[in-house]
Structure formats: structure tokens, C-alpha cells
Length: 144
Image 1 (cartoon, rainbow, N blue to C red):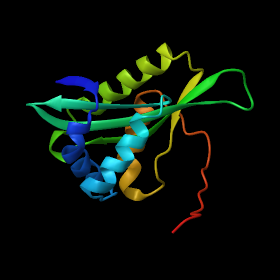
Image 2 (image 1 turned 180 degrees about the vertical axis):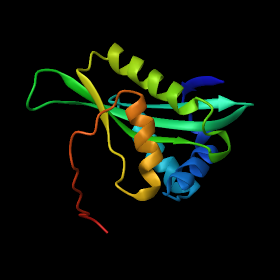
Image 3 (image 1 turned 90 degrees about the vertical axis):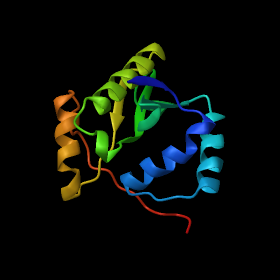
């Protein structure tokens, strides 16, 4: 298995992964998103490749704290193809993300994971990697 930066050529497989994560999209929409993300230096997108196939995706960004000196990293998207789960791919993506964040000099790394029953296994996965549930998130849609 190889972990590498995502490229524009990965978009068809990224669409499948995003659908498995619960966010179906089109090639056109994903191309627009990917172009915007890749043109922003604070974002970093990596994929896991097995058998010449993209089977995992992790997208993250960095930001600046208001309350502390320094910066933080946030994992915004993490998904492993359902046929490849429980093989250590997610763990390798997380470790690569943590290494990238350290190299950026960030203070901490965080992520959100929904409070739905089907996310309990994901919560255990994050806990086993040393992530601690620390806050309750709130969201409000501003645009339709």
C-alpha cells in the first residue's frame, strides 16, 4: 500500500469514497471542489493506493488559533473503501496526516465525527489512536 498526495486523476475514485462516506457528488462538482482545495496552501489531501486503486482518502487543513499562539490541523474527511476496512489503512492515513501536521509546526490536531449510531465504530477507532472527545459541535446551514 502507498500513501501519496491526491491528484486530479484520482477524482473518479474520490467520488466513490465520498459516496461511501454519505456525501454523493458528481465528477463536475468534485472537480470544482478539488481545484479550490488544491489551490489553497492550508489544505492537504492524501490517498491510500492498493492494487493501483485509490482505497482511502484523508483531507485536512491548518488554521490559526485565536486563543493560543500557533496553529492547529483539522482532519476534515477520512474514509476507507468498505472492501478495504479493518486492514490498517485508516490508521496509516491518520499517521501520515499527523506527520504532515508536525512538519507544519502545528500545536494540535482535531476532527469531528457525527453523533450517529453508525459512527460508534469510527469513534472507537479515533479513541484507539489517542484522540479524545472534547467538545460538542454545532452547525447551521447558511446557503441552500
